[in-house]
Length: 293
Ligand SMILES: C[S@@+](CC[C@H](N)C(=O)[O-])C[C@H]1O[C@@H](n2cnc3c(N)ncnc32)[C@H](O)[C@@H]1O
Image (cartoon, rainbow, N blue to C red; front, side, top):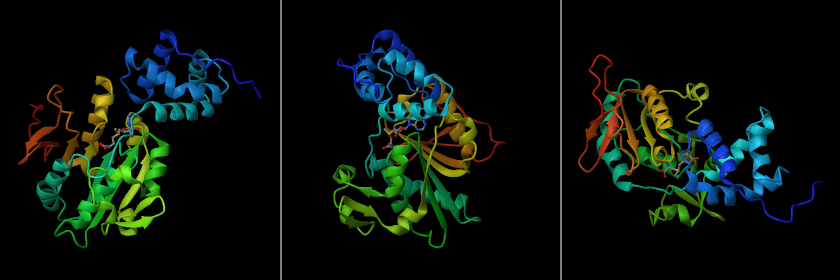
């Protein structure tokens, strides 16, 4: 066993640049020079645990073309990304989803009686379960096949979501929810009830991994909230292209409140709802595709 170095490793500008470049290539992350102290703090233990000793050695290790290096990249990405989320975050949008989008989707999918909603970048799963709760309570969907897919870059987050047990912090936007009929008591907080868990499937997925992402089925609505803000413009464009392609014609895209497509023309059309606006894949491919205004 290698001795633990007496001085903790420090990250200089050169090695920070190498790591930032790698995280941009693999996951599209937009990390600037100002992220250096955070990267140093978050990855220092990995530098020691892997035996790399220095950040330079760690950057070399991550660049190797081996399964161990790929696993270590996943570890590093898990540590440098933000997984902040909670139940019914940005509730105004979820209310709009229930009141104005679900009725439209019900018409869109009337012949198949199946709805699929994708939480792309679901972190620890609170968004996906919030959507499952809303769908299970939606009027006129009895007997429908209702599915929620949650995907995230982080394996650890996906494992957490599958466990379906949440502590206080996850309920900070929705007091009373933990005691509702959607949850049952658990020694670590509250567990999502089985019928809601059965509606949800969680998978690890890097939205920039075109090959794996292409196996995601078609979705009627996609929630991709508070993810694009962390990506460089080319990666945002690639992710939006993927989401457009995975949405059924007429399907809806919901972004986070600080994210908008105003500056990025694309194939989605904006849809004004009562209190918010969302995006939609035009219903037919023959319809002229408007740029996002
Ligand atoms: C701040 S959380 C957002 C969670 C939830 N959508 C919400 O709004 O509360 C952002 C998530 O995006 C994930 N993420 C970042 N880059 C990604 C990528 N390239 N592919 C898939 N997920 C990614 C992160 O792992 C993180 O869990």
